[in-house]
Amino acid sequence: MHLALVTCDALAQYQSTGVADEDHQLADYLRARGLDVTFASWSDAAVRWEQFDAAVLKSPWDYFDRPAEFHRWLDELDQRGVRLLNPTSIVRPNADKSYLRAMEQAGVPIVPTVWLPKGSRVDTAALLTALGQPEKLVLKPTVSGGAKDTFALTPDEAAAATAQLQALVDAGDFMAQPFLPQIQTAGEWSLLFFGGQLSHCLRKTPKSGDFRVQHMFGGGIHAETPPAFIQERAADIVQHFAPGCLYARVDGVENGEGGFWLMELELIEPFLYLDSAGPAAYARYANALLELLSRK
Image (cartoon, rainbow, N blue to C red; front, side, top):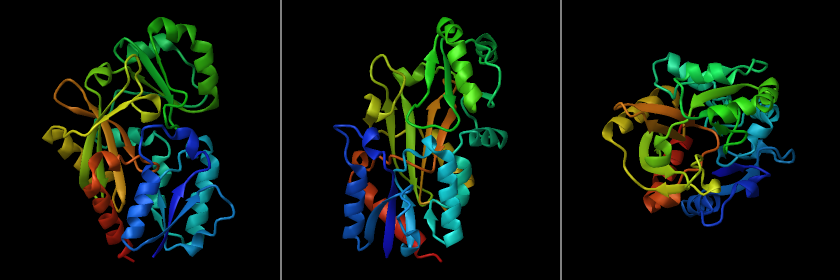
């Protein structure tokens, strides 16, 4: 079975010292399980995707810088009959965080959000009012990753940055949310599912003085088990919104009222934290992959 492990040309800029090279460790493990694994950049025009039995998304971390090109690549895979894991029908809507709006409408609690379509007028005072006057206002693009063009601003900072924010919203869709102080104290939960089954969980925390939990910004990774109600909520989300997926990562935060707010359902370019969970996590991933590959 010949697989493409899909990565990107800009991989080096997202890697961090002190963090395991998950891609190569995973590839080595899959090869030990008898699979023929080749790394391939999604944007490499020279790749003959039809030579693979399946293409498995792993680290296409620059897709949000080239969304139109990425969608054309998905179309090309469909036209060539190339199987993608996760499926293209799932990946397409997941590439824009406006999918959270549809999930909220379907009953999934998300972080309170004001949606700013491209060209909207940025009124920071009105946004703060709509979001309950948080201590800081968070703005980020709906097509983004790795905290790109993401801001956490006090009311005064937001007012002073209105022109800059307006220029960004004039260029693309944005979302505004309240700053959640519990992320700096309790952190953010990530729950990893392989083949629809919970594999492992962790709590991510930002470094002191920051709000970004990504490891490339110095965020901490802690292998911990969240409360049962969070596990149940995450499992329900995956069951209803990630059918037929090899992997899904549910990111969210406790809301302080005994509930769980979804922050992201990551189905495209996940860091899976396999090394943090130990050898059994690699086995669970491989078993889910082999199970899906056995289905025609």
